[in-house]
Length: 146
Ligand code: FES
Image (cartoon, rainbow, N blue to C red):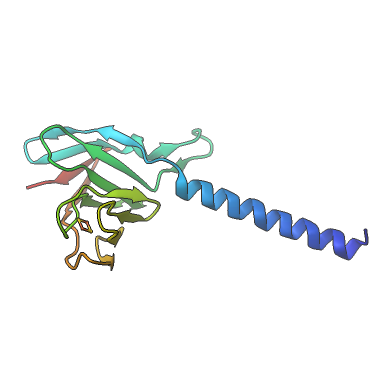
């Protein structure tokens, strides 16, 4: 094999591995967390987003919080250290509980899709998802369900 062909083959292999890593990350099962409800605030420790070791910190892009007092779970997306988005996982079409995949929420009933901002990506749903204000208080996320 010539040097040029070898480099070409290695480049394709690297691209394939990067694609596989991206695909696996996107397909990784979401973390489900039982979150405490304090009056109207759903409390989620920030440490729940942490992955990896202290030397090499990585973070989950999202997790799903639930509490038996809530009819639907809440997906929480980590945008940055201080910015998070919380969305009620209730389809605005006919109320089916949504599933979260990567940066999207999908409805298993009729296929509606929503972005991590809650906007409709694909119908039949027309209205955006309900969102909640999120406050970062020390090491806790306080999601205002009120
Ligand atoms: S209930 Fe979700 S698309 Fe119909």
